[in-house]
Length: 348
Ligand code: SF4
Image (cartoon, rainbow, N blue to C red):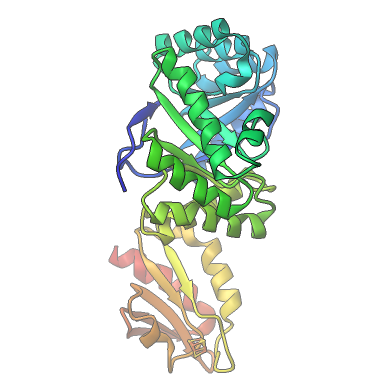
């Protein structure tokens, strides 16, 4: 797939084969700058690399300055209609403005926003989604579909380009993962601006994660997409965990330890489900990027998981630790996780 153009948001390069970055969006009131800063820091701690906040009024726009001063990741500011808020956001330190020129109103207002973004050297993200296509475009393309989504995005791009603005990134999101995939493929065939991927209104943790894994992951596998946001009706911190899993599953990024485990069956000889949960909880204690297998039986476990760096299994309350499929230690089952972590950190 042809490489996208590169843009820079704060200190993060997006597009052109740079690592696919992870974004999220705060759900605190932006004018509550302390609450918003706290949430952004929590997001940063779990691996969020760019954060978006919504600005709906003057107080929100004013709070941006304090927020920006207290965070280290780039700040993307989401504006719906009011071009004055976009101007304030640019002035108050936004690293990127998410706004659709078609929503701003007059050409003069679009020009003012574009000139501010040029002056502060910040990109604009155009965001088109299946719920916000104009009636005119829906009628022209016979409904909400990949053609109407892409036409909306291209129309917004044209407005910016008419103002000699090319520092743009684009998102085209549908709540239907198939439409999401088809639209982004079509867009990429026509245009090389970097793409922010996401499935909109994806749902709660389980359904939203699955839809996102399909809607985002399929595109990433095809080499399409430069930055991602998993949208969940849940704590934004969960979005980062899921996004990391998507990227790590496709070998696009590595985020420390990866745990693989067998599904359990009648041969399972250890309390596997509890062990996986304990290992997940203690994952931060392990230094390095290892693949660790938790397998239910000695007969099949070490062999099946021989591609893992380390693994654990057991039989009759005896815990077994293996490395690349070969048994390296035996301890009581209750001490298995402690000993595994000790061995890995000693060898690191
Ligand atoms: S590793 Fe053993 S316990 Fe786990 S599913 Fe395979 S056969 Fe069953």
